[in-house]
Length: 460
Ligand code: NDP
Image (cartoon, rainbow, N blue to C red; front, top):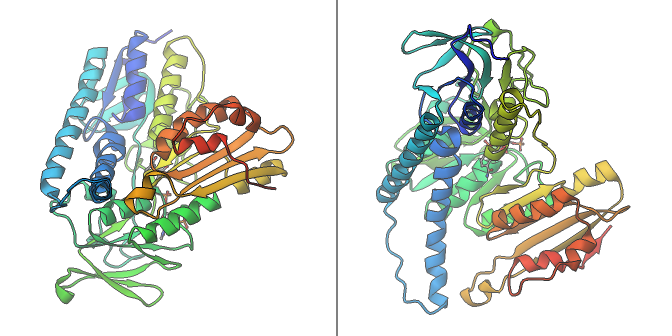
């Protein structure tokens, strides 16, 4: 039973994907809910992540499509790219979505505070703009993450760099960009900028990008970056950055391997960290792990009995749909009389490189480690569309099957629309489909996706 001596039954800190879902569902279960957001409603995904990034991917891809259209008979002259015009449209849409997030909360009966909330103790929060103190029976931390950068001691001149947040503040398209990192964000933006005609260089400390993904996917994406015109420099990191007017380019960068580079914009995409600084977690007694994450159990509960956390701040899987599912399960459990938790196994995901990566389940190295004997089916081919448009780009598909029962335990695609394909394939893999059931499914012809049900070449 809720304790009505508190101002709220539930107070949510953070108006991103996980927070708004939890707040709306809890309010629907008749809880009295408050939510504080210090910046703009929508969080990373809507304001400075998935949504504006995907618009940039589309913008970049239109350039390729216009070129390709010529071979399909269209008389196309590709003119200049109007970056300020495009960004104005992008920001207008982000504003619209942020407004919808706000009205969705208000309509659900959630009281929204447009200011920062910090813990005073496990049931008390201070709102930093108004100075108001509020109390809540239950508190949900959904503050997300933010881009991490080395300190100026670790990387002299780091203050001259931007992160993915800064990309959406650019007022003009750079001529030369250098991007540090080899993860989702670095690879996606390297393709975006190369596609927009920017001289793009990626500097990665390892030897093949997308660490943790299936090795065949990694090599395909790595080669794809180079084919897209990205200069990829591996096995090195930034040593220092200086502001200079060298050859009319404002930034001069030294790498630890002795090379140096010039750029208008340098972007650090070297990971994200939970956004917990100054939140007062000590005052509430909330436990934080070695990766700066809030430690939670499968029901998203922290070590403190009335405090939960969902989304990127817990670093279970830093993906929008995961935060949404975690927030929803929390609200149903605590306010809907329906105890349940989100299953973090077999999460489909996409990397919006060009072409995209779609992946679900285990990479080959993980499957071999977990199950020992596996059978791998894979193919690489030039899709039909590219036969006329002159593109040499190939599609890659791989399915990993557990040998003892023929269950598909991993599927990986590098292809146009791989994100769309893996959403559908994710259902089959989550259901535990076997390779035989894939094969029994009739192909849809002529498509790229049909190859997934006709895979024959195997290795063990
Ligand atoms: P990632 O953790 O994916 O990648 C970080 C990259 O930076 C890695 O290549 C890492 O190298 C490198 N790196 C880390 N520390 C250093 C350092 N000190 N010096 C040099 N390089 C370093 O982070 P991202 O920022 O790209 O993305 C964060 C998360 O956000 C992702 O993991 C994903 O969950 C989510 N995301 C999802 C997207 C999607 O769904 N499409 C899009 C964007 C983000 P190494 O590989 O050697 O560790």
